Length: 367
Image (cartoon, rainbow, N blue to C red; front, side, top):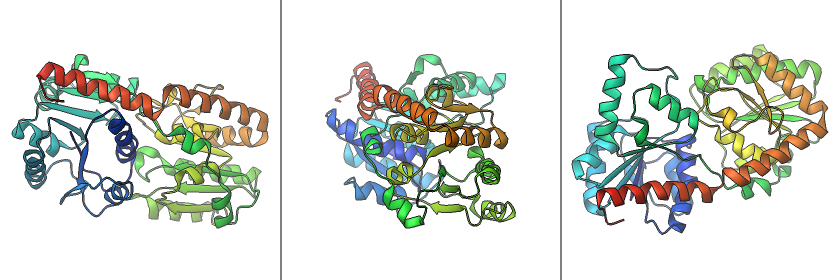
């Protein structure tokens, strides 16, 4: 089968695929990946032993050139199944090439708004035409798809999974030494620097925490179009000596292990993969009650939830956890247990493989 992505960076979809591929191989499924060449995602796939088939147009869901490139790969490789991740070009190429099954994973909530009546009909027609099955990474994503007009019978909920043991055994000592953090309290957020993640709210919360704990350190991990604006905001908030912009990091387990509290300030979120990673590392989390996040973070049990757009609430929750280490440890342990039980790589791979097999049985494919 062939996975098709339009991403150049290692965002949510890229990390999802990187996590999924080994499990599919263990399920006996032969997998190839097509994605834009030259980006961090292509490099990371190659580093892990998956040689991606290059696409020449990056970060664009559709281009005729990408349709032609994917079509050629499908014809040359004889793939029965195509699994796309926001790549309209991949779906069109799959239909043109006569692939027996076409799967789409929906990773986010899109606009988060229900579609108007006529738009619902268009979406229902398009989803039937260009997909055979849609995997939603959370119940919130599934509900959003239905609100947009997609037939619920097309949707299968398979939560994202992570290698929780990698995060559980990681050490943050090297990252703390690298940044000279010592034993300072450290709060961090791993996210693309894009509006839906609301990273400015993280900086505003950091400034409030600093007022109470002047020696606290703050890590912002990720890349995106808001970086320069955020650097300006950090300077205006007086965070120059406390805030570290780390950009894209391959050592996310080590960075996560270096934190005392992990934060996610998203306005909307399909599930919150970085929260799973922090919880796997037994870190207490503070997150907005947006989208699928409450399916991961149960208030007062596996973390603390706050309202989106309220950096004051974020700061108050962070200070509570930094001051009450017993509560922080309790939430961290409960989060780790939840991730190990419900959000493992094995569970994600098995659920995804079941979608493939059911589809191919229905379509009469070779597998």
